[in-house]
Image (cartoon, rainbow, N blue to C red; front, side, top):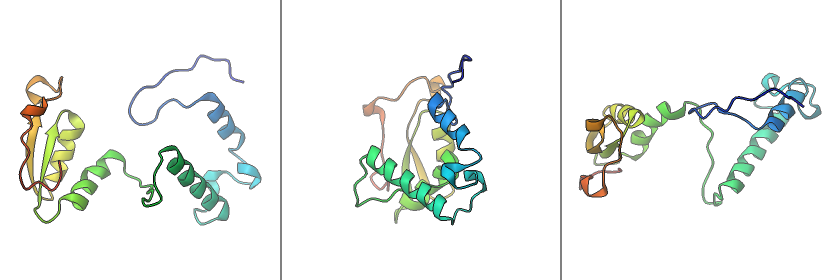
Length: 148
């Protein structure tokens, strides 16, 4: 058991993991569940990896109470990828969408969405450096927006 003080990371992205999780990962680093190799060394097509994938998917589905009518997708790219994926998948026939600009990420999302259609800023908190969320009555949505 590790006795050093641990740093608490509350940042977006990588964050603190419980010590028992890290200790288990360390123990399995060179021999994952008796496979004779690290997860980082195995093929994504191997039975061991497929079992990891299926177990992870089932655990997430159970924890998040995702119904069988829905699928879990694991995709790389993070938030930046989603800024393109949302309009590409949802902008629909109208080619129009509404965005609430309440900080850096929503500004980046709107900038990316501009590439795929006509984007209306339904509300913004830029006037006070994004230190508030606009009131419901200040949101101006478009009649033909495919999403907000």
